Length: 515
Image (tube, rainbow, N blue to C red; front, side, top):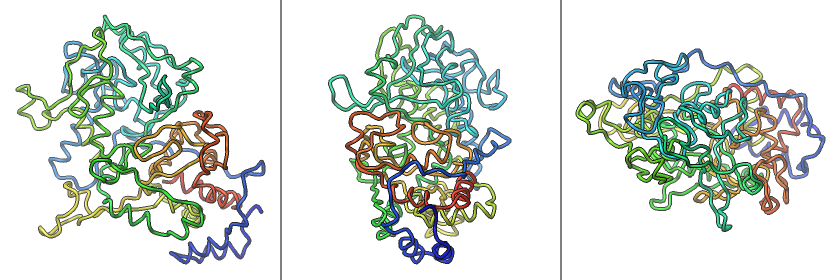
């Protein structure tokens, strides 16, 4: 059966709310569900990413007060810094405008190091060298920065074979330790070996090309950072209410989903590919330490304590007590905390104006069940323009109160089966579980899924399907555990997508690229 009957199409068009879910459940009953096969072909195609905005500088959340607006501008300067190893190694004055600004980002130096504290092992030497598509704070750029990072200041690192020059930038996690126990942590791509700012460092990189390493590797790519202050402001009770909503439709389709819970306080963790980070503060402090090797208030110990490579004091990135910085409210905060403020204050992605076809695609997106996990919208608590004390409950930043958060995610983790599994366990997120990725901003992303394996939306949708006892298909992380994973919770929804006609599939793809 290749598509819906005209009667069932009509049913889908008139159905709304709970009635829509019930009727489409009838229209796509169990008798129509089938395993994927070679007949999953279609003329529908991914229209590709939209053009980038004219400016690389993102907008802040509308409605910031003057102090918050000044803080946002300072965050752009601070998190665009190019990191070196020590204060005396800086090639231009710190904490000021760069001498050699990047033409695309006037807050960033093009080549000259203007900051310090980088540790012996790292993935990058600047926040936005990896988060730059389509703007500062975005996802992996079109040109992989690995070559530049590996050889900055004379570095003698070898660029791993999985870092293609025109491919996605990938970080590496190892699934298991040599003794067979679980690992799951990030293993840095590069070291300070050969760099002029660390002349005594001879620390070697991990051997990513050995047979054992190749079987043990799982990839992650940079996420977009836009609108995270809005996501932070969604209340746990709203996430739980949405989890219990439409229970019959979810149960019929095999959709479950559960939160990744913070162990000590029982709140819902919501940031990262597996919702493994409880807050954007934790996300920022960990990024400085894990991605750039910079110790800080949250992560005060260096990830490698080789004496020839540790040049920065530890912890390095802390509130600044130098006289000229301590007395300036915009300079006293450490860089990692300014990164937090950037993520809190940067605006969410905005969709394109939907064409008639894309509007139909939005309806079909809900009708076939995609929206049961990719929840279109939440709302932050509080009143956007409070008139009195009784209306002030909500986020501390008034501009974040009472806002629609059109993220297209339920912020829960779901079993995705062998085709997407990375065999990494993080908190309550198991080896084949991932947070429902927010789809806002999807229209400008170049690389898709957690490991960047494809740039094609059709492939990304189909890789949500995983039959029982699958070997993992085209999954770069597939291993001997693949056949033990349960089926993907998205299976029935993917089947519904495949049963649509080409015109209907194309409408959904056009809608997704307009987000």
